[in-house]
Length: 171
Image (tube, rainbow, N blue to C red; front, side, top):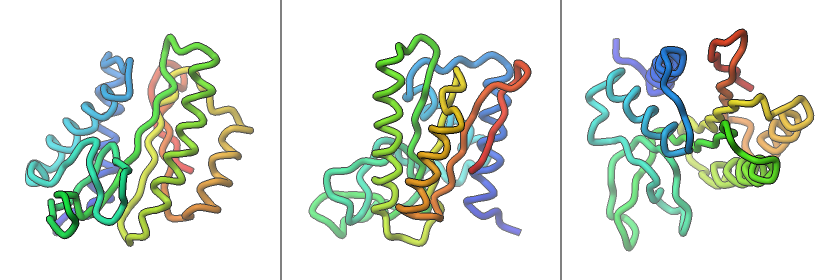
């Protein structure tokens, strides 16, 4: 039986957490995206020609998506990806000031709205690396409400530490 992209995503995220728990450190958003790319490839090698990073999406002008799976198409003026799955990544990392964390939270909300613009029936995810447990109950409520207003099908996955081990939390 062929795996669905959501199953591949789940397995890839589990591998990502294994790498984090074995010592891989994320300093910047690009580290998270690179590790995600690696985890997808070791989970499903056949996706090699369909994974795109910081890419244009078909029919979404002037917006780029951090991670997409899909085929390249020339239906628009410029090549873009006809997505089968999209992931926007955001980090609240070690060493960020309070001001930087507040900006990241603002950018997270903008990412939720951007993913909501994708009026495609494909799996859509927001992946959050939350090193300092920045997303307290009030902030979680705020992004869940925004997601529900924007597109209830967007899955938000938060990676955080619990008892010195990284775990994933979905909401």
